[in-house]
Length: 306
Image 1 (cartoon, helix red, strand yellow):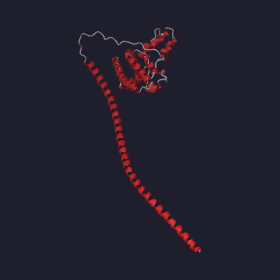
Image 2 (cartoon, rainbow, N blue to C red; image 1 turned 60 degrees about the horizontal axis):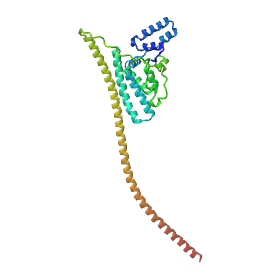
Image 3 (tube, helix red, strand yellow; image 1 turned 45 degrees about the vertical axis):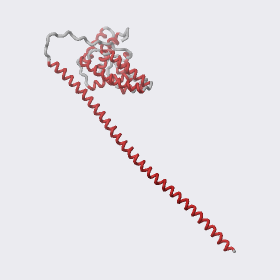
Image 4 (cartoon, rainbow, N blue to C red; image 1 turned 120 degrees about the horizontal axis):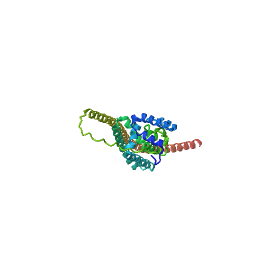
């Protein structure tokens, strides 16, 4: 937030930092307090704030708890946009690889933060979180929306276009709690300090079992996504291999046909040379015959006139 932030903006910043399940009652409580304090306009604005989607809440949590990691993601995005603008292909490919690795790692961290807050993040929500981070790297406008820590919905990369459209700012006003928040930054919040350890050892197999079940479910979701991606990659490779084999066969057929045509051409050239020689002889014989006919006609004419 700014050095002298608007009190209402401070309240919004605080509101979007509460647990997802506490959002609605906390919003309504703040709206009542504002109204009771005589600020009916602020109360109405507060009451109208939307509850964030699960993916949006996870991104907001990440922005507050892992500000440095989020800054790394967004700074890399700025470098990507600059590389695309400068048409530096090699640098762009290297940065794109970093982008994939970084967004995947940060998304994993976001899931862990949410799990620590008692919220299990599904594979679908994780995809939306990663997509939002990707969009923030593609677009300065999306980056600014993420930094507010007050997203109400996920942002899809398709909304912001490619790196070559970085100058075309998308309209993301509906992605944040209020358009006035664009340009602000969420207040970083340190992770809660661990409580004092309980020195009395108490067996709680139920808790451990639930944690193990959650970990297993998450691992299975990860495996399912990995298997789907691997299957898609295998299908793509198989298609390319088939196409490559087909093109090799077509090329071999063309080479064989070219060899046949070369042979046919040689034969035709030989035949043409022979035919041209025969034509020359025939033309000579024709000219001689014509001369004989002319001579005979002239002789006959002389004899007829005498």
